[in-house]
Length: 183
Image (cartoon, rainbow, N blue to C red):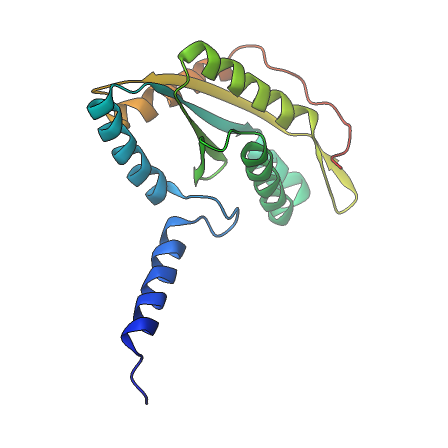
């Protein structure tokens, strides 16, 4: 067998690195990529006195979507959510699918109030844009929590704070899904 050239090896290595940082289902950054991004972002925040916030989203009732409509429908809901969050976030923001039915949107140079408004807008888009899969209209409900970061914020603490805020919001009133099909 012929040995690959150094250039070919470099291309293969770059491709493997990309695959290891991307969620195969949604095509957006995965948990490994998120952890790496947050580590670099918090170092930058410390060095340059930067502030922003992180929104943690959870698709409510996701297990029942899988149970009622099947896992392929659940996968379609996750791809739909990833696309909506990505398409409706700023170019400077970072959208990730760390695992399961959860998504993270990091909003750089956004204060907590602006981050909460943006997260609420994204939640409303998820709720108001159901997905049609195999002839069934699937309403999507989502909860979110927002945590601010600044110089000296620990990435693990930031994620934990946003996750806890999401669970507090999950117990409160949320927008009801609208059954208007996505275009």
